[in-house]
Every structure is written in structure tokens, then in C-alpha cells.
Length: 278
Image (tube, rainbow, N blue to C red; front, side, top):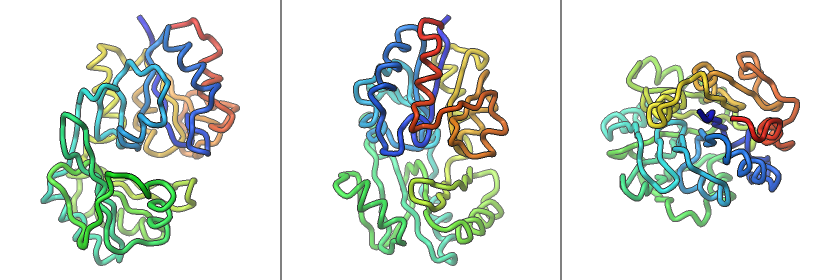
């Protein structure tokens, strides 16, 4: 039976230039002849597919931190969303912290079309992200007042840790088990991301969905990652591997820590070691 390999994208499989190297593409496609390969990312379907152009993608993709699982031909396997009522309540609770989020929602279950709702007031980190990464993105929707949507995939705050950590603790206290709260550093921008998801919308639960879809066991699964949102997946998989640039918290629980970083194609070098092995 073919083994399953799933890698995070940013800071893990993608280089810091936010691209997949030619070497990684070559090794991925060679390995795909002998094993099952996929991704688990905070990125959306459209952005992930853009990064992975030219790669063999036969296995469902874990997207948006685990809120969505879909095949490369847009077959929706699983999706976990927040209701509009809950999303609006979360945003209302954050008003006293003087920060507004991006709201990513699912418009259509067939096309997997998403909307990125943008608030009227942006901090420096949010403005930089929009200007440098999403300036021409047709999914952007600018709002005079930011609100939740009927199918909210995730709510994302950007800022300094000393601003977002109190907000994270406040939201946990108010909403408890009705939401998943993830606070983690974002090294591309030297800030923090606070992501609010459905309580079953994380990478670990999404990985279970992939296992069920493929009829595979956790023991035959190897995962790669670098950040806090990979930890649940690490604990579930048979083998967990951290790239050398991973956060220390991730390295501490990994079965293997690679000598290479993401910029040194650590994932691809690991896959290359036994290219013909299942």
C-alpha cells in the first residue's frame, strides 16, 4: 500500500520567495509515481493551486488551516464553517481591542469561490499584505463595516503579539469550545496572525478526513511542517518531520528534524532519499 506524505506550504515546502523550487517540483513528481502526496496549508484553494502548478496532485488538499478539504479538480470532500451569527459576534467582541480582521468565506460549494472581506481600517501589516500579495486579487471585497458571512471559513487578525494575545484569550473565554483559536508568529512579515476557525476546522481533523477518503491509516502517514498550526497534525501522523527553520515548539514534538531549511528544499531532500519506496 502506498504511503501518504503531506506537507505544509509556507516556510516548509515553499521557499521564502513563496515559490516551489525546480528541484522540489522534480522530486515531488518522481515521488508521486510511488506514493501519495498532498499539502496542508493556511492558504486558499486558488492560491495553493497557483503555487503548485506543474505538480502531480492526486490526493485531496487540506486548505485554509484545515477548514476545507478538496481535490485538485474542486471536488469538496469536507468543509467546516462558522455561521454568520457567530462570526459577527466574534468580530463585535474584538472591537474593544481596536483591531478588525479579514473574513474569508465560501461563496459557492461547486466552484470553491471565496471572498476575502477587507475592513475599512487597516493596520500597517494588513496594508502591506494587501499591497504586496493581493493587490490584483479578484476575491477581495472592501467593506465599510466588516461582518461575518453565512459560510465563514476563517477570521484572521494581523498585528503585534502584545495586541493579539489578549484578544485570543478573550475570545477563548467568551466563546469556549465553539471556536478554534490559533495565535502564531508570521515570519514573512515579522508579526503575528490570530486565526479563528470552526472547532473542527484544523489540520488534524482535516487529516482524518483525508484518511477516511483514501482509506488510509495514520501509521502510514508522514507530515512535514514548521509552525504551531501543524502540531495537531504532527501528533496524529505516524511520522512527523520538522524543517530546520521550524519553531522550537514544533521541533520538540517532531519525530525527525531535518538538517535543511525550507530554502534548502528540506522536504524534497527527504523524499529523494528513497524515491522508489512506498
